[in-house]
Structure formats: C-alpha cells, structure tokens
Image 1 (cartoon, helix red, strand yellow):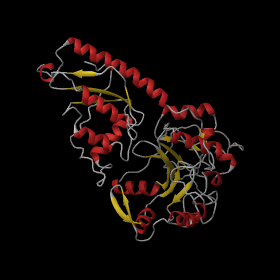
Image 2 (spheres, rainbow, N blue to C red):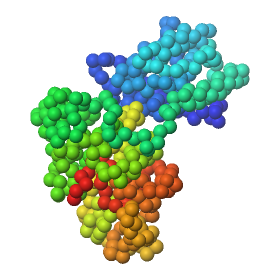
Image 3 (tube, rainbow, N blue to C red):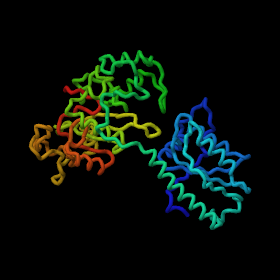
Length: 426
C-alpha cells in the first residue's frame, strides 16, 4: 500500500540472543546487523504485540543489547505500531515501549500521538495478508505520512553544523576519549611515556580482538609482517602508530620512531597544511571513503601508491585515518608472469602527467616523455598537492569531491609528505 511513501526494510529479531550483561554479544552478527541497519536508517518503525499488559521479553531484550555498548537509537526518530487479538490494540504495550525508548541510555525520539492500534488482528487481514478495512488503511497511510515529516524535522535538527577544511586542527589541541593526557605529544619518547602513563600491556599479554586473541608480541609481528607500510592518525589528528618493520631509509614513506605521538602539524611543512586539512576533512565528513595518491616519478619498475582510508566504528563514528603505502609493481609483475600477459601502452589513454611546464610555486611536474610505454597510465585528475590529493584550485577541488564519492584518486605535483605522518626526508 505505501511503497510510494516509505522505503521499508523489515528486520527480524528471531536470532537475537536474550540479553546477558555477563556474556556480551554486542559484536555477534544478529546484534551488530541490527545496530548497523538502525544507525543507517532515517527512522525506525517498531511493531509490537501485547503480552500480559506489556511488550514481549524478546523485544525488551533487543533494546537492552542496543543500549548496552552501542546506541543506534540515540536521537533516532521512532514510530510505534501494534496489534492484539482483542480490543486493546496493544495500547498498554505501546505505552511501556515508549517509556523504554525515551529512557536514558536509549534516547530515541518517539513520535507523539498518532498511535496506530490494530485490534482483533486475526480478523483484520484477508487471505493475501492485506488489511481488509479501507478506513484502517487510510488512517495508517496518514500516520505514515506524518511520520515521514517527523523524521525530516528531527534529522534536520540532528545535522551537525557545517564545517570547512579550515576548521581541521592539525595541532591536536582537542581531546578525544583515547587521548593520553599529561604526555608531551612532541616528545621523542612519547610511546614509552604514554605507555607508562596508562599502564599499557606489552609482551606476551593477551589482547582480545573482534575475531581473535593475540599477545602484544604476536600483534606486533603480524602488523610488521604486512607487505605495506601502515600508519594510524586518530580523529584528533595525532599520529599515534606506524608498523616499524624497516629503518626509515629503506621505507617507501620514511618515518622515524621519534615521530610517533606527534600532532599532524609537526610532520608537515607550512606549504602543505591547507591540502592536508582538505583531505582529512573529506574523509572525516564522508565526502569520500578513500583518497589514493601515486608518487611522482613512478617508472616501469616501481609504482608507489599512498592510500588514505577513513576508519569508523560500528556506529559510523569517525576514528581517524588508516594510511597504507605500497609498491604495486611487484604484484603486477607476478600477475603478468603467472598469466603470460604483458602491459601494453594504450595510445588513447589520458596520461596522468601534467602537460604544463613545472610551476615553481606548486611543484607541478612537466609533461613526462621519460615514462616508458609499459608504464600503467593514470586517469586525468585535477592538479594536486602531494600530501593530500586536494586540488590547488577551489573549483577543481569541489568538482573532484562530488564526482566520485569513493575512492578519490588524485595526481600529485610534489613529493608526498604524507597526510598522516611520513618523514619529510627521503
């Protein structure tokens, strides 16, 4: 009846375990799936029967899970509907459910009035499971239309105030839940000081992960064995980790141990700050999930790529940037050797190299006749600052961020100084 009014997806709670605080199932597939779907929805309609003058234990249990360690209902517009065998139409269950949804920890915003109470439910539907009574259908339709308006109003109030890239604080002067206070971020031994401050575990102490348990030593070995260079910059714009597998001089994007803990402002020259802010802002605000940036001067034997990916939790809250740096050519060569294929230049391909002469103020590269024919060609992209992939021209930047939401691939003009903390030195 109402496909032109709402885009509705039905979520079943049959597989959700009964709530048990001592056996946390927040990350189990049924609970995580519900949490993710509710977080992504514009609004939620909850249908409830009535059992002994109240709602069902199973529905109460679901709400317990969704207000224990995750809170997808917080500030979410909710409409309640219900049905019962007799003439009460679940009125008492709906009243109880409304009180639960509006309680601290759940914090849903339940639409007032306009209750839909369906009595004598066994006689209300025909053989095709459609409501028989035209008046009931009409009333339900009007209630849904009011809920759509309610959703728009509530969500407009919940929208954060618009910010710009200029608002990004690269000095990490704010504080987030995981900020380690009382330790100088710029200290060369920040890791050691911070670890002592919070009594961080190390060595053979076990750490419980989403789908496994590793000791700290195992976790370090696992990350250091990755064939890519990893960097973590948190949502406060503090560079807090890189996988220290190689000395700086052997890395594709050199980093040094004393840089860990530095605010982003300490790992970038002044000329790069504007573009660093633009890329961070794009990732933070969801304009794109990933920014890809090839290093200038890539040739037939090396193709180094910096990728910046936004990290988010189960409620889509921004956690920071995962930067990974890799040389793609070894994998490409392996693939070609195994398949008997080869790279052939496409004469119609648009080169990613700039056709302009080098610009002293931006470092833009000149037309490259030195790139061998076998080198993979890059798609055209606006001229960019190497550290961020952000366009030098404001209009170009806007176009680049709206045309392709994810990933955004950009062509650098200068040597990458790395959005998340690469050393300026080779």
